[in-house]
Length: 224
Ligand code: SF4
Image 1: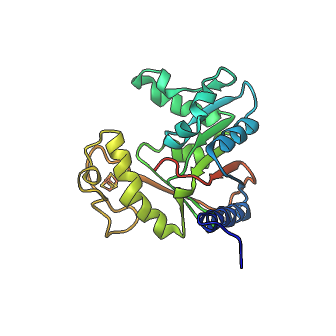
Image 2: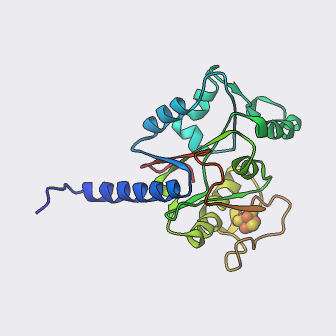
Image 3: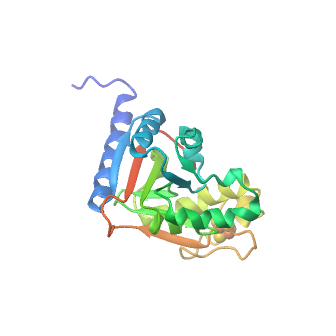
């Protein structure tokens, strides 16, 4: 008879899911790590970043929750901080991200098959994830892990998009009704409103450049 206490099997189940997902990401030539806590994840991010490097980020609640944004503003890096510039200068800053040493973001979903799934409105985040910055660091909580790409698309349509639309005060149908108006359609089905936050759908699978993308999986719920 095993000696597990009440919550231990749940934690063990979660750890094994993170490890399986990390292994699948490594098979796709991403450098994947598992952390138990966001504090551990922050220390790992710090160890991956070179001092004085040019660093950029994609909008992410996960990075805020882990203390990464604070780290980037510590003065140890040349941080292209979009919150420190006027709105009309942001597009220039997004373009500068393509020549950055590091780009940091989260992922809307990560499949247990080792794929990153991301949906953008403007497209600056997904484009920098695909190409440009020398290295990319993705930090994601266990809540972002899903079984496959269908579940990833559903996660975005039912949770990530509506919640992000509310956070950004966007008057989209999903913010109003709680899920994408195109929930029954294909991956890119959706609304036709000006403020649509889902325009580009990107799956990152097997990578041409090994270990350019680092993925840090955290055994906690982070972001949405
Ligand atoms: S397509 Fe429109 S309604 Fe659907 S999730 Fe995106 S913003 Fe919301």
